[in-house]
Image (cartoon, rainbow, N blue to C red; front, top):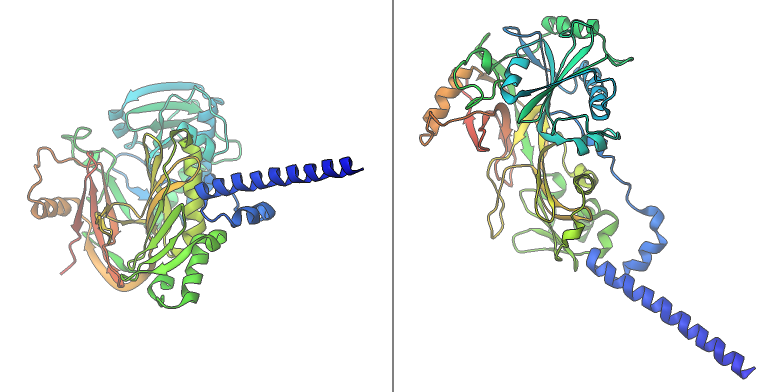
Length: 483
């Protein structure tokens, strides 16, 4: 009997040691991944309350949709709130699925990138992205498998031509930035017909909507080498168009914080940290920068609204993972905190692969007009310069760093009559930037944009020209006002 009792005691001790070892391993893991060991067990008993995974398909939208009847006819930009945007984009997504799966693709052809200039002079419906979306990401966005029959490196721009094919099929041209691929497919069964596409164009002629041309229609020389042929310009019609200013402010929760108020810090902590808020020490430094920190991560929120995040541990190369896994982590990070930004839409503007991680950039649009950040100064000791609203370094396991300029936007009351003519813009840029060599100057895209500068105060933003060069530089040119 004594022997039995001793064995039972040994069993209890062994069981206790196993449980203790398990807890210690968990604590070490938690130090590496979240920071405060006391929440390790709490996490076990609260798994049901974990974060919802973000559907990356919600982030898949074009930067711009352009419709035209062809050469010397107007080009219209279809804004996201326009009645034709949704049916056109739904059709485009259905045809991208065709291309990814090689379903019913009856004809293919490949051309040099110069051919894109011919495509945009045809009757077309063009869908543009700010960066090339590769096939793997396209498949993930659309929850579709893809096969090798889709020869393009991805989609940077895509044109749907509903009436080019003599057999009454639909023609698609895909430009990946280097080459143009042609595909012929049948019309989607429940999608838009040739008549529907024709009716859209006919109705756009009747609407009060801004008209553009493309640069190839007006500049014959140096197109392709120095000028992207599909750059939208205004060469006809009235010289001045009416625009409103845009009011840009630091989010109210940040600008009105009382440094000594624990309640104010708690409110921001809930928004920024969510269910992890108890893991972080909170403070406000002498520069009134809000700091949330634990053993693995640090958040700083500056007075201008900039959110800076850093993961404090070393990263492992095996954690890099796929682009899809990394993008999903980036989108989850942004989606959880996007309530700190109001008045604008967020879109994916850049993708870069690095040795051990990926970099994704995101930017803002207000009513389909870009909101730009050009060499925006970070008010820290390094004085970094930002060119995007959000820059995220991320691998398949976690966000490694993030710079995110948090702002609130609302339409102002000023009526601005601004010169939109193409030739006026070029006169101004060479006057403003004396260092430009006109023989080497290139244009990848021209956009009207609201440019945000560093400020802790409210800003009234007026539209400016943003010229993007093929080499990746940006030039900002104020728009001329009507005298």
